Image (cartoon, rainbow, N blue to C red; front, side, top):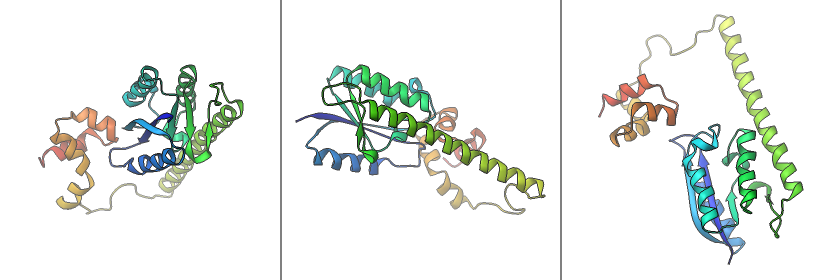
Length: 206
């Protein structure tokens, strides 16, 4: 039975990767593949590969344990930056490890371990399209924001609005959980994208 490794990623601490694990597990069962290990991470896909501990550990694991297939639900789980995605795939290719992308049903290597030219071409195009889509969305949001302000629109909370303590605790429950574990304010901010000032306010509740 062929052994495979699962790799799942979500962008923020409040998201859950269990759905990805479940989908990939069912995929492995259909193909009669044995799951050797599952790697999961909660980190922005825009980070460099060197900053992503789970991805680095996965690359080392497949080399040591002679695993020749890694499963992901979609290409964006490997990363959002085109260059970083292709760099990760290149490392897998050199190790003779095929990346199976579930939503497109394609692999980077053929059965004899050679690079699959068609899938490699598709992956490059898909990654670039995804990058362009994100750029377009960002530009539209910035344009709408600027247009709103140009027409005297006010940005931020309405005058007199204030969250209740219960609402605040519910919104930042993951931050509070990390604070209770002793994670530094700076590390929590880097992981969640929440400002240090807000995290410092959360600290007053523990």
